[in-house]
Image (cartoon, rainbow, N blue to C red; front, side):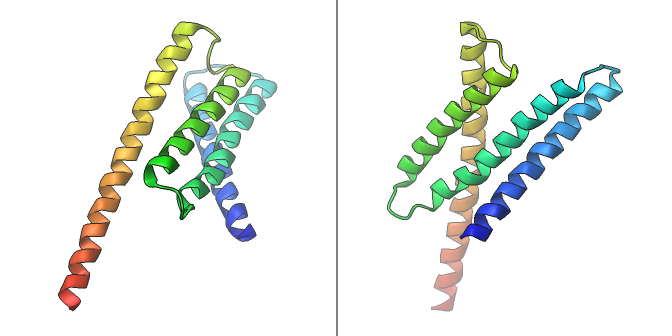
Length: 136
C-alpha cells in the first residue's frame, strides 16, 4: 500500500513537472521573461495538483461507497484544492467573475473527463460480459 502511495505521488509530480515544462516552453517561444521565484511558485502549484490527484485516485477504490458518492467526494475535494492552489499561487484573481467563470470551466472539464471514463468502463464491462458469455 505504501509503495502504491509513492507510485501515485511520483506520477502526479511528474505530470505537474511536465505541464510546467510545456508552460515554460510556451513562455520561451514567445520571449516572455519570468523570475526564478515565479517559476518556482507555479511549479510548486502544478506539482501540488499532481500530488493531490495521485492521492485522490484512492477515493474511487472505496468498496463501500457508491459511484455517486465517490464522484461527489472527488469533485468536491478537487474544487476545494483547485481554489486553494489557484488563488494562493495567483493563477486566478480573487474576483467574483473570475471565480464564477473558472468554476464553470472546471465543471465542464471534469464532466468531459468523467463522461469519457464512464463510457470507457461501460464498454469494458460490456466486452468482459460478452467474453464471459462466450466461455459458457
